[in-house]
Length: 502
Image (cartoon, rainbow, N blue to C red; front, side, top):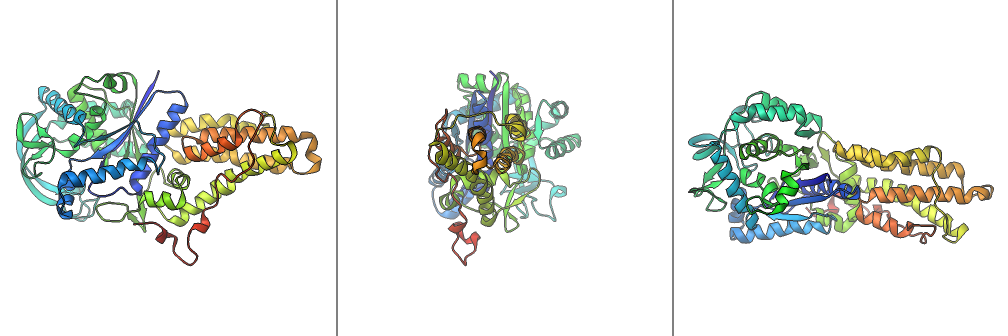
């Protein structure tokens, strides 16, 4: 069976989660749920990146112990499961999970045995926000392109990894498609970076600078493993790499799909550095790196570091999980940042869910009960509606393979649109349609049931309510709004943007 192992990037816990984290989690959740629906064995991993220096800095600024600070924020990320209806199978914490420390130590030793480490003094420009060294040429007006702050000049003696050794092998994996990057624009960026030549990079930090926080370098307790090495390793340490757990063999070392869902700001780490570490250790590469762009609010990127955030828990509490998930899947561009507003969320939920799918199901069930007492045999949808229904599963499969959630949700909308056009053309509510009423209602019910089933990876809660109304066989439940309009939940005269806790 073709296994599917899907992961998100693990988040820094220097602050609470924001809507950008929700985007990535929901995208990965859809991929996991869809693969399960198609009968594939799935493992979905997420977690938190606890060992970053920025977490130490934030804890000190808050005046609390680092462990207490990290534990509290990590719990807030894990608690996104319920409000976002996530289905992850595993949640790893890099500072608290025994699997992780053992796996990082083993990965380090394997790379050391390959002769890929050396120690030297390094001077460079370091951005604490992204835990990364930048060259002067990579800066934007002297500022980090991610956080728009001036990097700090740093001089350290660290362990370095011989990335330059792996230029040709990484290039071959990318050009051959063995390591697939979606969308193509991100793949082209990575290819240009690799073709420009790879230079060795630092993989440790002085333990004193990190305040003793982090995983010690095996054999060198004066150094801790650089947070990016540590964090990237979670994809295999969560499977028991280093502990002998058979999960590693099943999900990583055997044939199957290994997909990382990440933001565009960390593509280089996942598409260049991580494959090089795996090649050094003699491990298989991921098969797919699926990249989303950023969300913004008021034109500025959502970021814990800058304080421009939107609380996804508050958002779901006010507008519902379905509305938030639907916006995250329907609105963000495949390439290019997307600006969030509550007005756009409401417009999308009310237009697509309440007025579109919800209205279709409600009027179909109303007619079924008004004319047939809720008993209507399902029939095969004819014409354009039948064609749209036949094509729906394949369209969703192809769209999600391409990491295109707009195309996938467009496919669902196409069936809803055809069903509404079919109802308008057949007009089953008119007396003249009495002789074909069963066929028309049966076709509409079949279309609605198909949409509800294929919707389940996207909106598991809403799909479950639809299934409760539509049921199976020749009996349907009484009509009841599945997707109530939410536009009235913004106070009259107030800004919709004020409805979200920042």
